[in-house]
Length: 413
Image 1 (cartoon, helix red, strand yellow):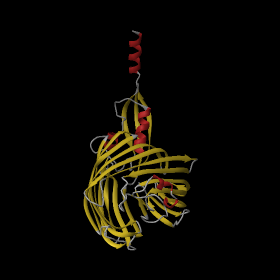
Image 2 (tube, one colour):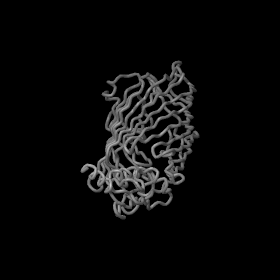
Image 3 (cartoon, one colour):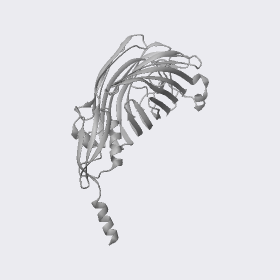
Image 4 (cartoon, helix red, strand yellow):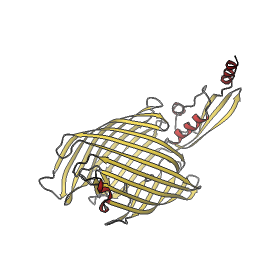
């Protein structure tokens, strides 16, 4: 009898959500926010669930900042308020540079990361680097339910690419036409999965450089790529500051019928670790470990490139079938007022590669090691999604190193 009385009292005293209020929205639909959060009107009032909802909201591109408040209503009923500061999410982008073929190049695009006010990312770009490229992308993480979504991408990419052989290199016009469909599933706020397929056609047309009877002048091959991405995310955001750990695992299987390009497997894992240092400092680290099938081919998948891994190294200066890269930097907010922040950063980018057809000893060979320290600036608009203009200067300290300036949108990692 005593046990029964205690149990009844425990249930009677359980706190519940009388009403749920979402404030601060301008473009976003209230129904969308109510769909993706775990806290519901009439449900149990749970502080851990509220904290998880805030973390989920702050990871959305449409949210600049979010917090919650709880107010007593009556008896064991409470009103819950979610206060959301929205980002501006209709983002144009434009880049100008000199391409590998020394052509004047530009890229323009427009993306809405809150299309229809429902957290859908939709947009595309057009690029001209002497050749026309374009893409259109749609990503709806909660398209079906608050756990199940969809991504669809189409791209037609053309560029001049260097391929490296023993004794030299050759320049090819590379064309990739692809159509990709992915299913997106969120187990909870920390664990996410992407699974799908990419159907694409690759063409290589010889332009200049080294050639022989063993090196094809033209290739045209259809391929199928099966993709799995597992995302373990424990990051917490406060405007431009990030803290926590994240692991992103990519696994791909590419099949084709071509004597120069065998079927191959590729996988890599990006490990991120961020830590707040005082009020204005942020330590950021990224470690990439990757391997692929080790064929002795100029079409190796891991490249050494300014915009991917080593700032200052140059544009696709080498390729490999394995990679170890560590990017580490310290970011310090130099000035901040209202919507604007200026960050300075110092960094070290270091990496090594396995040569196509090589062995694991390649990772320790000095000719494959590149170390580039440097510094940069970040101009940040705190209320526009990913509105970070970055400029970095990297200077190589290893053998035959180069140096250079790298521009971009968003943090480097």
